[in-house]
Length: 432
Image (cartoon, rainbow, N blue to C red; front, side, top):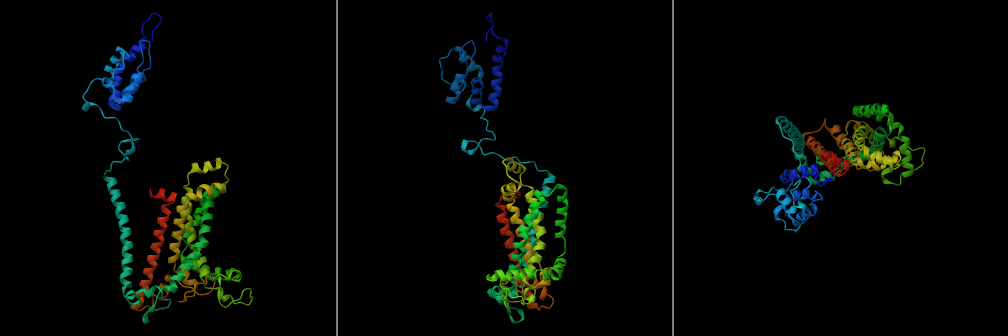
């Protein structure tokens, strides 16, 4: 741009003098195509045509500097080109910069993930974690191997009938876990059906509904329930719960007795003279007690996952006009699916192996008993506790075989739960 006397603006002259220096810097960082783009930003001045058109032609043709064809735009373009990109061999030309946004589809290398430098402390910490995981797996494998070796004698005698025989007479080689395994699964199923809705409701109330001042007290109370010994729950169920749940058992039998699960042999629907003893020491009572034992464990797991639901999504749901229940249903519950599954299966594993409370309540029978309201039930853990003291060497091997079956069942439940939970959103984030 020229002033009124026809002189060139000093600022423009200084900018043109600095262009070769800037061009060399940009060429070193970004390659020839960045140089051409840099010169294309020069615009048009009063001396002649601007450099934007020449730079665009250089970008389109894939060449820059003296390699681009003569466009016939005058000596000023050629001189500017010579200053911006000096002739150099192809081997000396810098490689185009490939940054973190390059991808295999664009011809660039795959993005690299940053890695922190590992010092001595990091290596020691990594070794400790690896050793701890290996020790845990080794202990689990050692327990399974011990049970398998001790149960080998009984399994060689019973073979596949061990899973189909209901009687338990190991001294005459007539034994199996069909009855006790059925009772174990029924007690655990009753416990999970009762405990899961209670645990979910408690966890949601603590994490999303309860005032902040009350929340700490509720968390402490739930954690204290998990610390109560099993024998205390067994005494409570035997002397307090059992006599007060007979009315509920009678009502279920009268109205839903047409379902085999709620049928009670020897009673008629609506019979007021039916003995109350047929409803005691049942799978239903044992399941209620076990449900109260596993609810705090399930609630703790679910509460921690619900509390990690993204705050932005919660606020977004409220901003769209959702109520509190709408926000919980749309954000918290879908996010906490992994925690719900994990807590449920953790409680199921505890219910499958519960011993003392079940042993104090049930009346052991060695027949397949599908009626949960009727007196008489059994479980694998209660069987071991009942016969451990007076078992013969062969009977002890049979008990070890029953323990091995329970061990395998618990592992299968936990591995299945971890697989399902890992597919959920919260589970995937915890794995990452």
